[in-house]
Length: 355
Image (cartoon, rainbow, N blue to C red; front, side, top):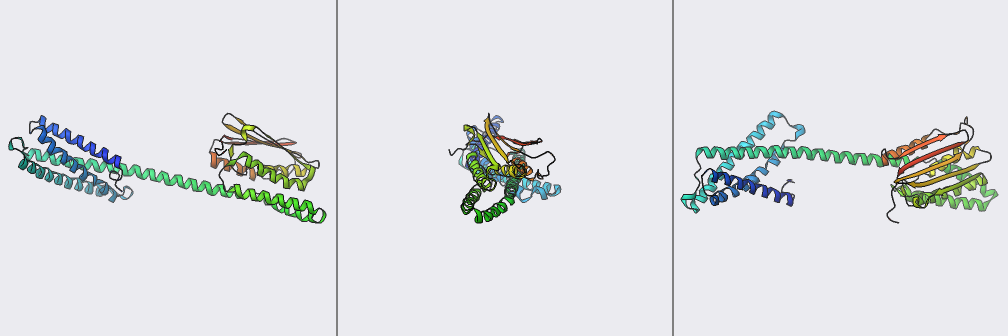
């Protein structure tokens, strides 16, 4: 679609610009003593409007020669020929319209188009069309750049979504296997416990499916997911597993990526509490400071020489997710001492608008 004719406001601006140019030409004719102002306006305004619409065809000439596949010699030949033809057409229009006005008006005020004036009209038409070609060529080049940027942004968005889907799918399957094995063992010695664990496991996976497709959920929703997860694990580990959540009142409605806390709790159990005879307590602390949400997960671990610290895949995936969503605005750090593992996150605070 033509960039001028497809936009009404742009079309009006183009018409106004043509009329102003026509008024300027009329003024020049009057200053040169060639005719009166009334005749000059009657002559120049329609001519410039026709010339403007003639120049608008330069857009299609530029579109017929894509910049990426254009040769300089071909461009010079086509642009020069189109400008030459346009200049001749406009010169013919000038002579024809002037003769019409001469027939309608008094001879004393009519404009006599001499050979010198004909050359000026031709050069004006030639230059106008050539400028239109260059202007539309520049417009198409910028439009192609904007389109390329839009395609690149869309590609980045698709790549980010694909990466997030992969990262979300990398939940440790051992949790499900261990839970099913525990349910199987409990059916013989504690049927009620097996039933309770089955219900808790179903609730956990039901909520997982409801939040996994969302880009962000409230912290309260994530905490409920963690509670369902811990309900399953506490049936397995009993009093060996404890948990404490310290959440400030203004942090509960913060928006966060789904399932960033649950894998951390799973790691805390798998690589920490499970290997301790006396068990331990997982402490989750969340608070808001200015425009940042701070989250920390702390759990006891075995000796520094223990081989149960894992390969760091879950923490690496967490950093990748934050990088895909927040770029460089989020931070994830962790440290391990002889008896404790501490992970800290800081991400931009976003309020859940639906609450």
